[in-house]
Image 1: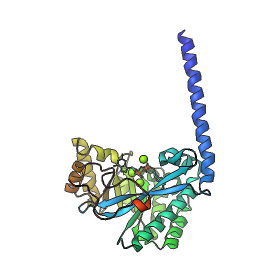
Image 2: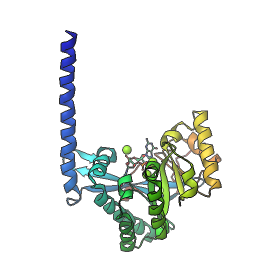
Image 3: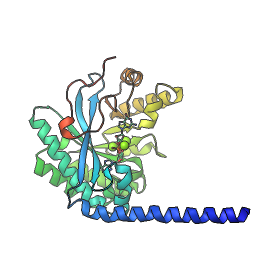
Image 4: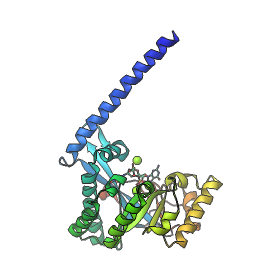
Length: 279
Ligand code: C2E
Ligand code: MG
Ligand code: MG
Ligand code: MG
């Protein structure tokens, strides 16, 4: 009887797997057409100065308005786009759109407005990125120094020699580089000294614990001290509570990002000025 139950389980499991890989395959086919059908959207989440809590910039976050499944978040389709290489063209679109929006906001009088754009490991490893960034800047008139490319640690770690070359090439354009999700990877801190990095973004898992867990607080304080002594700026991701805000302000964090100041939203819903809820 035991054996039979085991056998059934296996069959159910196999059926489930094939269904989900079928779904992924269907999504992949849709993804190939999505750019042409103009189904991608960018939502923008404010990044505020830590002491003023005024928006000083935004992170562009990709969404897919799928005709059947509705608005999809990147976790659902960016891994497929990475695996298939579709992320290269999608990423080019993201860069162009984000720079256009950033230029619009600067024209509307938001002085010094900065735009952060995510670059996946696959995009980063391809030679076309430099030209895409150059093109997005030229077509929008967005100033290079206001564009921040967010790259994860793991993108840099797979081939550090190549990574260094890529970063130096990007830096010649005048853009800035941020390390995204800092503190989650198996990071060798040595790269921070060697690579031309401008900003680190401390991962939201760490920030989520910072006001409840002494160890998390110690790590965040150490990361801030280290970053500042290397003349890097620090953004805290995933700030949700007043307690986290107060602690990060006291630790001299430079910028804050999180639901506390605004969720990612369409450009028309973006708010400027002071974004901290009353405390
Ligand atoms: P990320 O770059 O670390 O982006 C921050 C994510 O944290 C966003 O999720 C954002 O909605 C979420 N977040 C921000 N504040 C809070 C908070 O206070 N609490 C919580 N719980 N979450 C918060 P989202 O938009 O789902 O994006 C997930 C990831 O997808 C991004 O992580 C990034 O790695 C990737 N991604 C997004 N847009 C793009 C893109 O244009 N290109 C590429 N290659 N990847 C992208
Ligand atoms: Mg999300
Ligand atoms: Mg990011
Ligand atoms: Mg992040």
